[in-house]
Length: 191
Ligand SMILES: Cc1cc2nc3c(=O)[nH]c(=O)nc-3n(C[C@H](O)[C@H](O)[C@H](O)COP(=O)(O)O)c2cc1C
Image (cartoon, rainbow, N blue to C red; front, side):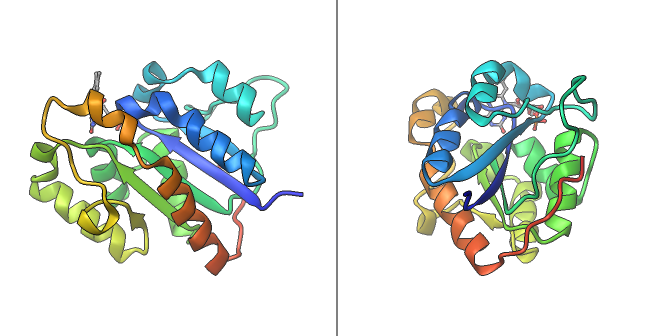
């Protein structure tokens, strides 16, 4: 018996190395999980460790391994974490130039409950394109965990390593499950 299936997308920033924390939290709450990585994020993660925990291959391209089911279970919630400056801007614009971005574009379009947790420094967060992207995603009912109310602020440039340990994995999972409980419609994988 599962409470739902959580699709996780990791982007190329330091906290991606700790995504197993989110997988473990979700598993303890009887959610199944699968992880998709942007092409750049593959350098930040231990794919074998993730695959052992989730039972699914880490997806980064449209190709799937021989003998592995191409489609994943229906998706009840999507968490994009860590979300880079680059990917947040692309997601808000609807750019679908890799498997991860295409998956996100389609799941948001299907109104799957979606949580984004940026990991950006204050210089990047000051940029108008980023601020517009966050506002536009919120207009689409995407939950962006960022700002004083969320207790998650952009960090000073150069301090990412020390900030990584504080990454709000648990808050992301709680936000996703809250949204999923309000919208109990699951969506098949676009892959
Ligand atoms: C070691 C390293 C750390 C990085 N950390 C961050 C970061 O914390 N936040 C961010 O937005 N980009 C960071 N970047 C830059 C992104 O990796 C880069 O913009 C990349 O193109 C993002 O790809 P993606 O959005 O497709 O995952 C980092 C790059 C490197 C090499």
